[in-house]
Length: 113
Length: 112
Image 1: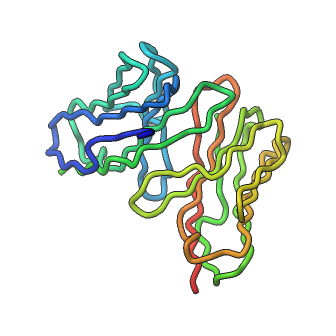
Image 2: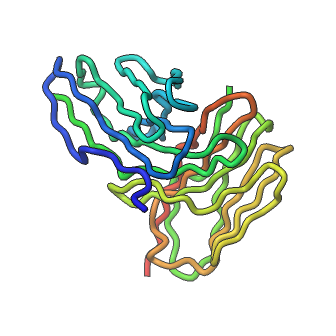
């Protein structure tokens, strides 16, 4: 059972480049989300999805796009990377409320230069 | 808007001590509260999940309590060990939202 898988683990981008962070889960969870973790800021919610075809914004959505075409996958797209997007990104999944124990991937460390 | 606070931000103790980590939240209308552990450079590992109808959950040397009406949870670690050194985060899922909101964590160091 792989759980939540994130790729890549590390990435360096130049300002203005685009890329997609991949997230896949094999637990048939309806709910998936993306967080960024910055020193002193904790985990902040970027975007989330309550099921295939449904996405919504979290606390810090600017500069990021998401889509959810399948239950298993929830990619996060950076259209034009900026140094302020240097962070560690985590993907999480869970069943819908109230059974919402969340499972996290191992993270993607992104540096934008 | 739900806000989650964890105190203290950092804690350094000798091995063997019993510890209490605190988590408070502003909106008591929650489905549940979850405690996580994060090792440096790693992802989050779920420790305990307390549903809103429960008062506490236990796993080994860990015990988490929940007082929903006062917006507080505590994580009790008995007989701490150096292997307990990590950052501990709490998170709450609030009614009528689809969001799991995190506190900023408590960084724990247990020295031999």
